[in-house]
Image (cartoon, rainbow, N blue to C red; front, side):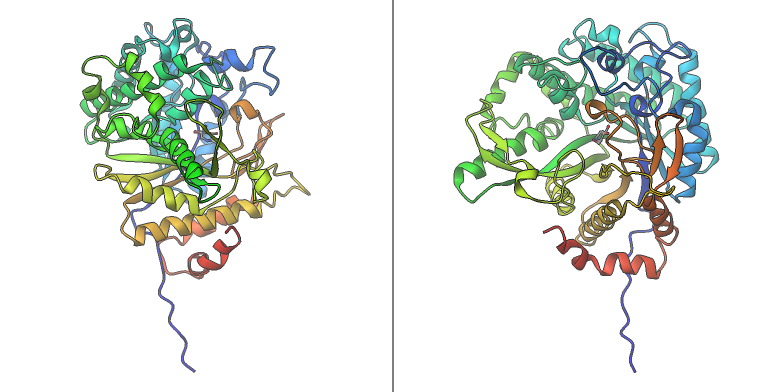
Length: 469
Ligand code: NOJ
């Protein structure tokens, strides 16, 4: 009998597999060794905030070695983490805190000792409170504050770390923090939003240039939250509504970097941002990034709506559409990652793409000492398969970093929303591997070989994907 030979579909040998965390969500030690408050310390310790606080995070500050050992155990290549600005410069500017630098040197050295690539994110939302007291991202002085901070970090760590990310998801921290008031610092309104958004855009360029100057052979990127946006029906008004949401969520921060300006063609209300745009800003905003980080979690179905003004569009909540949702009520839609890879690849000036974050959150209860997060395994199988499809079609996707290693403090959601490969007991910070961690370890062990496991994951792709369509 002839056995049909199945051709193995494998990820490229140099494809980077990683995991990613952030300072505020993980470190804890919020007032230790000279660190002062960030806007998230202030926000979550305010009596109006009822979701707990990140004072302890998941205690990465005291557990960094064990956690980095887990990265190794999982057969991952990359550990992406962010620097806490207020640990390094407790007042935002001025005196450097040697203990702060020491902590990150320890983290970096431990990664290098275990042959794990450290990737640094310069800003993952925890602005020093003293800078917020002067207006934070709405104050144009942030351009100088940020430049000083980036100079210090790149000079301190640039001889050890080659991979740098300037900002983490500017639309999230600006949109939720300075427009909706749902994230720190809890500000609202169009003016705060437009000022903060423009300054963040300029800082991406400023940051990129400083890394280029100070770090030899650096690989530099910045990251964007992105959502696949589809209209609720074929009606033109809904299609246009979807385009406006897409411009806001997916085009706003990347197009100025590429020299295309803000997407005012689609989102006419954005003309108001011009008040904040000064001479030379168009040049300052541009930077030739080596890669763009895509951070994908869910799809949005959009429809026309009179509110909010300017956008004239709203979302049809996933719960009303009776689709598969995560425990934040967002639709789990792996194909959306493929659509976003397509979208970002279509910009001729974009070089490499890294999936710098993707993941899914559930309640993940421990039952008899085990966490059977089958849905998370399915999510990774599907998004890996879609990533591979994109690579086979010639898209330059160079890595996939999982959000996240250990359950941590999920911002406005607190600690109930679990994204980790490892479960964290928030009373004593004991970590327990979830089923997904065990699966991932096995998958990655065989990643570059023709293996049954790899074949199974990839060749059954279409069948698995159907469950979501
Ligand atoms: C994106 C953010 O970068 C990260 O901090 C957050 O926890 C995840 N999304 C999940 O919401």
